Picture 1 (cartoon, rainbow over the protein chains, first blue to last red):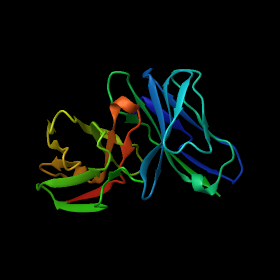
Picture 2: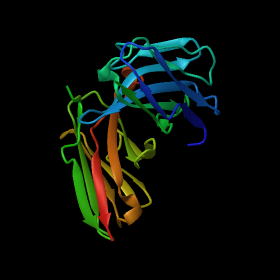
Picture 3: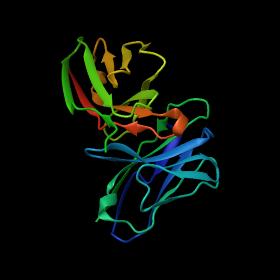
Picture 4: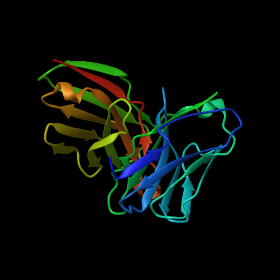
Amino acid sequence: DAGITQSPRYKITETGRQVTLMCHQTWSHSYMFWYRQDLGHGLRLIYYSAAADITDKGEVPDGYVVSRSKTENFPLTLESATRSQTSVYFCAIRSGDAYEQYFGPGTRLTVT
Amino acid sequence: DQQVKQNSPSLSVQEGRISILNCDYTNSMFDYFLWYKKYPAEGPTFLISISSIKDKNEDGRFTVFLNKSAKHLSLHIVPSQPGDSAVYFCAASALNTGNQFYFGTGTSLTVIP
């Protein structure tokens, strides 16, 4: 959806490197989420944010850091990338008065 | 431990026929359910939702049925069209415990023209 952008779309990095995935929305929805999609696991929640400066852990937060200083941006940082973090990462948003989440196009990350 | 399960990794259906995608969950606290469709190299797109106070919700060709006693929901697509070929994910949440939705592993639907 054009209201949610993710960058980069593809990234190859080496083990131990820090990498940041960006998520930007144009709708000012209060909630933002980061998921990873892996074969055999579906989508799993990494972190989410209910508003600027409010973040909380999801199902698989280890090895990831998030911040949300502005409503429209929700970057996800892998502080020291590991091969197990090779995945497709999706950002999602939702408004405060509905439960449906709307997803960005995804970032395919490969850690070598 | 997978709280939401889609036990059929794939499904093939003839165009015009009904597609039935199934989803089972283990947590009796789940009270809101979503279905998403995903094309390759794109993010999931929201299809339809259902609250546990209902047992059916319909939107055009898509109907979701919820059987709370069996902890089972299903998505019916009638009639199926080739453009429906995609991976379908179900997701569930216990809304009063937070904002986390748990997703199934997906079912790949192929609609044969």
